[in-house]
Image 1 (tube, rainbow, N blue to C red):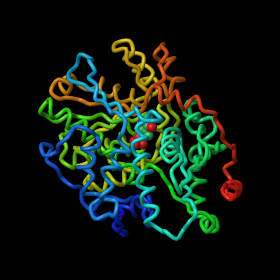
Image 2: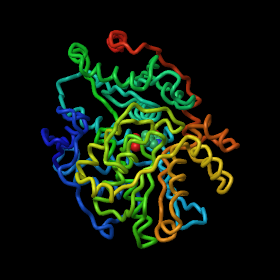
Image 3: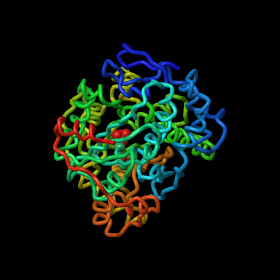
Image 4: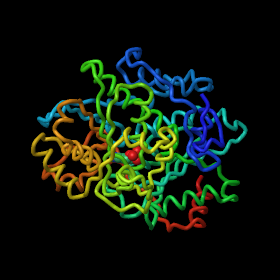
Length: 437
Ligand SMILES: *Cc1c(COP(=O)(O)O)cnc(C)c1O
C-alpha cells in the first residue's frame, strides 16, 4: 500500500509514513485507498486476530508485513471490554479502551508506533548509529503513553515536554516516573509553548545536524491505524450477537480516535451513526452546523485531553468526505460544558454506580440528550477514553466517592518522579539535548 499526503504532493510506503509522521509538504499522510471488508468474512474474536486481518492491506508490500501479527499483539495486548450499561433507554454499551499501562486509549497507538519504529530503525539508515530522539509535547495523556511505550526500547530515546500546572497530579506522575532512555521536561508555559518548542527544534538546522530527531504526535499514521482495530472489533462483537450495526459516540479533541472509528466504518465494519462529543472547544460542532471552519486557540476545560481548538485530523476527514453535504450526513458533533460534565459524572454514579473520566462523561452526556426514539431503534456504544482514577482530582469531588486505582496505574504512581524545569527557550532546550548521554 502507498500513502499520500492529503494534498497529493508526496507519496511514501508504510515505514515512510510512520517514520516521517508529517509529509514534507506539511500535510498528513492518508492511505491511497481504504480497504473494504465484509464483516462476515472476518474470523476471530481477539484484537490481535482482527487487527492482523484489518491492517494487512496497509502493511502489504512493506518489509514489516511479516511482522504485523507480532506488532498487533504488542500494541493490543490488554483487554478492551465492551460492557453493557443499563440506563433504561435502550441497548447501550461502553467500550473501555483504558486498561493499558497509562490508563487511556493513547496506549494503543503509542505501543503500535513504538513497536513499528523499533523494527523500522535498522531498515531506515543502518549506517546512522545515533539514537533516534523522539520529542513529544503533551497536554497530559499522550506523553505518558509514549514514554511507557518507548521506555527501554533499543536505539530510541524520548523527551517529553509538558506545561507546568496544566496536567493533573497523577498525569504528571505518569509523565515523570521514567528513567534510562526517557527524560521529562516541565515547561514554564502552556501546551502551545511546548508544541512550539518541539517544532522549533525540528526546524533548527544545527540541532538537526547534531541529533536524529523524530516525532510521536497524534497525527502519526502509526497511532491512527491500531485505533481502527478496537472500533472495528467492538462493532464485530456487537454484530455477531445482535445482527445489526451499532452507533458510536466518541469523545473527541484532535479527532484521531473518532477518525479511526469513521475509517473503520468506511472499511465496511458494521457501524451506523457516529457522533462526536466535544467539550467547550466547539469548533467541530459549529463547523457541522454552519459550514464555517473557524479554528481558534483552545480553552481549558475539565476534559483537558480534548482541549483542542484546531483539530488536525480534520484534514483527513475532509479528504475522506470532501463534500460538505456528505460530511454532514456522515457525522454529528455536540459540545458539552464543564458544568454538564460534572453533573453527568454525579448523575451516572448515582444511577449506575459507575464513575466516568471527564472525557468519557461528554459521551454519556450526548447519549442522554438523544431523542428517545434514537435510543430505542438502535444499539449505541460510547467509547470510554480514560480510566477515572487518572482524573481523581476532578471526578472524586464530582461523584462524591473515591475511585480505586487500577493495578498498572498504582505501580507507576509508586515509582519516584523526576523531571527538569525549563523555560520555553530553544537555546536552553538545545543545551539539554546536547548534554543528554
Ligand atoms: C486524547 C484523548 C481524547 C481525545 O482524542 P482525540 O483522538 O484527540 O480526538 C479523549 N479522551 C482522552 C482521555 C484522551 O487522552
